[in-house]
Image (cartoon, rainbow, N blue to C red; front, side):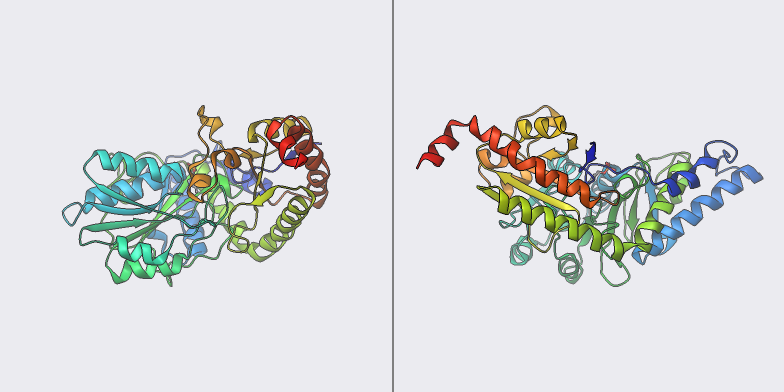
Amino acid sequence: MKIYLDYAATTPVKKEVLDEMMPYFTEKFGNPSSVHSFGRENKKAISESRSKIANTIGAKPEEIYFTGGGSEADNWAIKGIAYAQKNKGNHIITSKIEHHAVLHTCEYLEKEGFEVTYLDVDEYGLINIDDLKDAIKENTILITIMYANNEIGTIQPIEEIAEIAKENSIVFHTDAVQAYGNKKIDVSKTPIDLLSISSHKIYGPKGIGALYIRKGVKIHPLVHGGAQERKRRAGTENTHGIVGFGKAAEIAYENLEEHNAKLIKLRDKLINELTSKIPYTKLNGHPTKRLPGNVNISFEFIEGESLLLSLDMVGIAASSGSACTSGSLDPSHVLMAIGLSHEVAHGSLRLTIGDMTTEEEIDYVIEKLPPIVDRLRQMSPLYEKVKGE
Ligand SMILES: *Cc1c(COP(=O)(O)O)cnc(C)c1O
């Protein structure tokens, strides 16, 4: 058995997506900026893909800018607004649970003289709307709050946050990389000014994403050079990536309801079974305001890393609550922000479900995980003590 439950990290490219991309590696290889037919064919493919993506979020095609992924879109949105609007002010508001692409960009800007407020979140990972209102100052130029969290799956009240930003004439950006393909998003109704999305989280290829930039929003260009992406992000377009992203986006929104219903059913089964079968467990994130495919559970008295290795040995690929992947032993900033102790955060497991997940796979995890947790706990002196009491 080989079971992939790490869809929040990345997803496989769907067959239909790959089929659509293939010709653009070989016979349809022209440079989209060329005037001849080879170029025009490519230019047309890019513009069709741009329209498909715009349609999924209620945007105009010319408001979609292709980037090299979600991180690049986040960097561009934040630095681009900061530099373009610094004559108006130097204050940015974000939250403590953002993706590192947002947090590290904000930290960089602090070194450049900007001031950043990092909002706290509650035990479920939700920001407090009154805290947001209180944080707004005369010199606030940007609010950047993620749509849905990649670790604990919590979905923020984005409509409400966007309205507050608008009332105060502050630019609003949201990192929607996890929400995109799972939530209905409509920028013609919700006053979101900038929105980041990424292809490889929705069964498209890696290294391609987009930033939605509302018409009229003043932003610095990202890459100087040719006239590509309306002179804001120069460089010959990643045509095959763009074509794949467009197809993946189209499929995601055609099948949204079906996809969500399936994932929610499997998610809730996993949550209910694991938290009822295994003692000393805690669900992280919000019980209902959460991504359809996200399960994040803390198991007291064990190390997430040992859990991951044991799961890997029985063929289950998951993710843990510490940042060991990046070579550090610090527990995740998200789990810290929702108030977990270091110990409990270290014993956290993220299982993320996707389109290819089957009920048999979920049943296999429900069968395999409890004895693994039990065995690891037997090695914990602390657990022996608690059990003995
Ligand atoms: C994956 C992810 C990103 C980064 O996207 P890349 O395309 O991998 O650069 C940013 N934000 C969130 C919430 C993500 O889950």
